[in-house]
Each structure stands twice: as structure tokens, then as C-alpha cells.
Length: 356
Image (tube, rainbow, N blue to C red):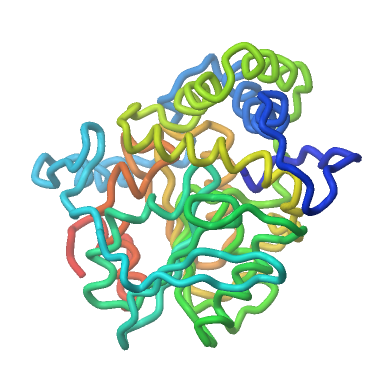
């Protein structure tokens, strides 16, 4: 689920087409990787969620104050922005990927094309609150990774970047502006490196970047497996909330986490890792903006800070009070940033001031 977790896949796998396991053991095997990664960071940092990178300058702090103004309103407790949830359903379709299908939604229209790539701790519904603002001037496409959300479970091996290629081809898109959160950010980066002509710009929300040296602590994997065995799905979801959604446990947030937990057994069985990207970030040649919240995991923040330094011309936007769920926590900021990026303006200035 979390694209950059380096743990190897198990040597033995259920054969394609066999019955999907339903035991807590299957859930814990996949889930333990994120627990191992995140808890190792918590131990070394004392568990403080208010981590600030050394490069968080006074000027950045002053600019970030704009993001906390009450005038932004709140769609959820702990979530900034008032964009209504999209209920459009008449533009849904399925994309054939080998023997499998992917659910996708296309707003259609003639504006700039934006493709939204969801994170590994949720599905494409995470974009509901930015959908109205983006579709007002852009053609927007989103889809669920195999086994997530409205996409059926995979029955054959696949890579995330390979499926993104197939989605672009299905909609006959030569180029698109890619917006990726966490796992989706890593997918966007991988495609931009492999086929630079297809990415017009990158908007990366707390991206998970393959090749970053994540810490490994096997004892924590065993700890999480014990938790999963004792409490099942509910225990895993609650653990994820503590690790990835520190800003609050609203029903919409918990539903996203639960969706991810249910996708994990199939993901563990069929999803294959793409090519390492972290040491190739200097090769990116498209306009890039990276956003990360100060309530995210400290090692994720550190990796994003370093990634922004490595990507030529990358703009880094800090999101106070935001965890690993930025599109739910601050949809107005995300919408403004994406539109400024698509329009080729000054992303940081436009996003902070609310201009477009």
C-alpha cells in the first residue's frame, strides 16, 4: 500500500484465480509493513507529531499562517474547505487492464487534462472534495487502483505505473497534469521519469517515493501481526488512524482507512514494485510542486524535504495541521495549488493567497 516500504514480497503466493484469503493473518501480513515503518520513526522521535524540518524558515512559517485563517471554513471537523462532495456518477467507466478491470471516472470537457492518483491509505473518493473546483475548468480523470474502492480485485500481477499508462491510453491522452498523493505521487514520479513527454506537470501530495531508505524493524512487524490477530480489521484501522490520520478520526477518514485495509491482501498478492526513483529525482524535467503536512510521519516529511531539494525547480508548500490525508483536510488549498500548477502560474503565491 505504502509505495516506498522496502519489505520483500513473500516467496510463496496463492495462485491466480484461487480463493482470496479472509483471515486476520492475511490482513496483518500486508499491514505490518506500514506499522513497522511508522512505529520505528515514532520510537526514534519520541512520538511527537509536531516535527519541524530544519529548513522550515521564518518566512515559510509566516506564509503558512495564511492557511490557518478562519475564513477558509471547514467541511469536516479538522478539515479545511467548503467544497461540496461530488455526486456525479454518469461519467463512470471501466478500463480493461489485461484480465482485470479498473473503475474510472472522467468529467469530460475540453479544458486541461488532470489525472488524480489516490494514496495507499484510501481510494479515489479522497478526491471528492476537490472534484467540483477542478472540474469547473479542467477535464479531470480519477480511478481506483485494483482492489481499492470501486475497482475489482486483481487476478494477475501488475505495477502501478503500468496501470497508469493503460488508463492514459484508454482515454487517448498523449499528455496530462498528474496529481498524486502518497502512493499515487510515487506512481506519477515513476511515469514522469520513464516517459517524460506524458507528464505536463506534477503536483505531489506527501508522495511515497520508491528507493528512499526506509527503516526496517522486524520486531515491529511481529507486534503489528499480534495486534491484527487479536483485534482484526478494526484494530488495524485504528492503528492506521493513529499513524496516518493524526488530525482526527472523522467517519470519512476512517472509511478511507478501512477501504485500504480491505484492499491489502489482494495488493500484497499481485502488486509488484516499480523502478526505484529517489536517486533519479534530479532527472525530472517538468514543473513540480510538493505539499506535505506537519502532522505527517516524521520520516515521510524528511523524505519529502529531501525530494524537493533534488527535483529541479520544485516548489515546497508546508501544510500546518495536516496529516497524510491532505485532500480531505484542506481541499481548498489542494484545489488552488492544482489549478495554479495547471495554469502555469506561481504555485506557492497563488495557493497561499487564494488567487488563481
